[in-house]
Amino acid sequence: MPDPSESRPYGQYAALIALYNLIFGGFILLYRRWSHPLERLSGLDLAMLGLATLRLSKLVSEDEITAVLRRPLVQVEGDQKKPRGHGLRWALGKLVLCPTCTGTWIAAFLTYALHLFPRYTRPFLALMSASGISQSSDAFLSLVYTDRDLLRDEETIIKEKRPRSG
Image 1 (cartoon, rainbow, N blue to C red):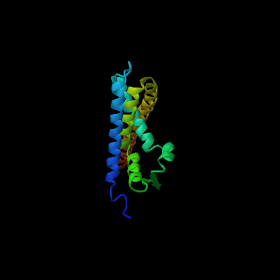
Image 2: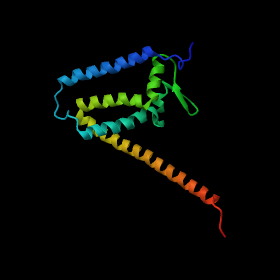
Image 3: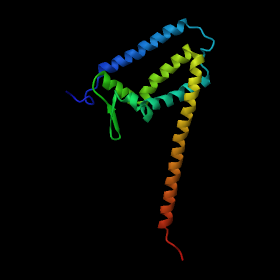
């Protein structure tokens, strides 16, 4: 049996693309018949969609707490994660391990929910957006502190190499 990482399951990838587009088509049909005063998207809605998608895609793809949900599709060997099995299972594992890929699906479902059920979706978006801001802030601060520590280390090395004058 060939190694799944060597032969890509293009048929299953095509099926996932078709499913994504089929769901989108279903949303469009529902949306055409739906008339709701809260259905318009504002700039704030778009920002919340982006931040919530950021947070949820990381939650699904990487966070430890959701490892139990990824387990049927992903195997962990040490620090490495890779898709299990082959065919559709492997393709879904690959999808789940990619925050950008997962984010595309999550963004779609959040957008559909926001249009179809805005009153219930907006509080969820606010919650996930706040978490997304926190995640982004943590990442930014980590970069700042890492750079600060590197600069301090370089400064210490330079001071140690300077000839001492007596």
